[in-house]
Image (cartoon, rainbow over all chains, first blue to last red; front, side):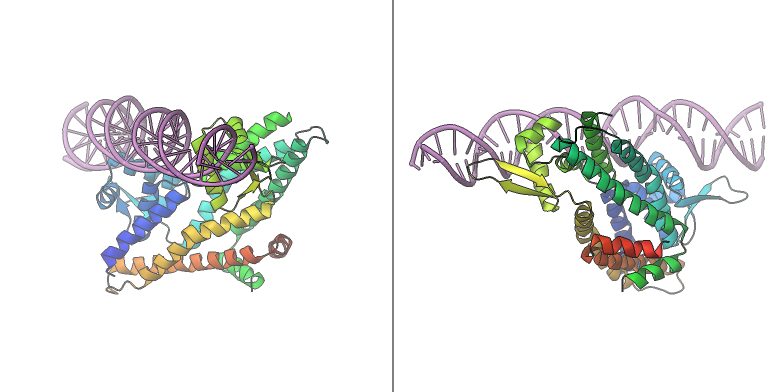
Length: 168
Length: 168
DNA sequence: TTTAACTTTCAGTAATTTTTGAACTTTTGA
DNA sequence: TCAAAAGTTCAAAAATTACTGAAAGTTAAA
């Protein structure tokens, strides 16, 4: 396979993966493009590579910065902004985990705690099932939360060697 | 909070969570409803609770069965089908992990292996960056894969106690 | 068989999400 | 201070995804 074909496939696959995980396709594609670009790119260059509009490029770059996956660079003597993606996969994984934890897991845990307070008739089977499901999900969520927190603090090498030790 | 309000909030939250993770809202809501229902429900009952059409209910139930999260029951002397969700959170987590691994991680690993074969000019910075990114992502994907495989085999108690040992 | 109860399918419609592009704002150098 | 070169915003359009409802298909009891 040629490099140019490989690059296209990579961008396409990253975009698809993103959309399967609730991240918009273009945002994931821009990220993919930056991941395989040695130098920071301008908005113009990104627009051209992916054939997207200026507004689209601008908005999704903004979101990527919000996710902590891309940073703006400016070069002295130039008005243009350049965009650069951290290439360290471990940082990317942690950053995504961190954002999703904040945006999704934390609110869910908050809700589950509220739902744990629901009181009802202990003879009501609906109540018993509700209570038991909420309790179990809460327990899982808290385990996931703890694991994520450790992961967020961990060094890559430490994290994987620990995992490795456990999982044979 | 009243049980009825709690049930609604739970269904709503589960639906939202699903849609943030690329699972359609209705499917997640049906799953939520079944999770807090002590008895198996009929299509009619689900349609009514969630105010959705027959076609919608049918299709999403089918998908839930495809994900291994819901099973059909039939009762002798009755023509109707009843739907029941496994309430064991650990099974649910494993089932989702299993399906997403099969549908998404496995194909990505396959592609990454192909992309590892791309050859180019070692002096080309584009090539070097491409190569390095693909390699790193491949490594991460394989670690995730290994961890998932272990999780899929594990008993809940074993899994979490192992995690717990490592992560303080 | 027939029939009634139930399930499945799918074309058309609706809802949601994403993208565009043009107007507007900001920055910078002359 | 101005004008050119960028960056930003957002209403409208396009694309995608989900839902409906009615017709077609299936099953099982009589």
